[in-house]
Length: 155
Picture 1 (cartoon, rainbow, N blue to C red):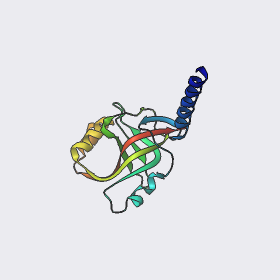
Picture 2 (spheres, helix red, strand yellow):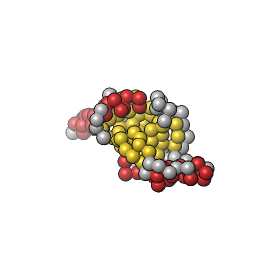
Picture 3 (spheres, one colour):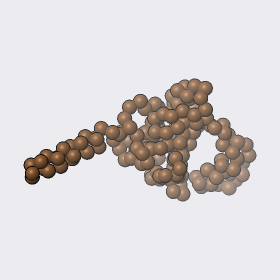
Picture 4 (tube, rainbow, N blue to C red):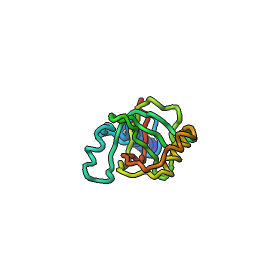
């Protein structure tokens, strides 16, 4: 009886170890993490989306800025020089504020959207921009954004 129980325990631990080792991209994980395979660089998102307004995908890029209040959003570097805003699904998790310059992998939904003046001003306040700069925001902005279900800070 002891051998059977010991064997079943060993078998259960083996399944757990295999499942843990092969499911995701290595690194510090937030939210649902990111499963391995099919990562697109930020520069290829718009082409991958085509005419769609939203598309589910996994992407990778370099962090340019993180919300200075509590890590509730971040931006990634793009080839055009503009940053792409990343938010987190249902505010279920936040990012460390010291990851500027680090590479990340994300799993979620890319969106083509228009950001209202009020939201742009809110983002500027979160980034501790000067009042004069915030006051200059007077028109909505069309941009490519991403809502992440999971993020991994790559090693």
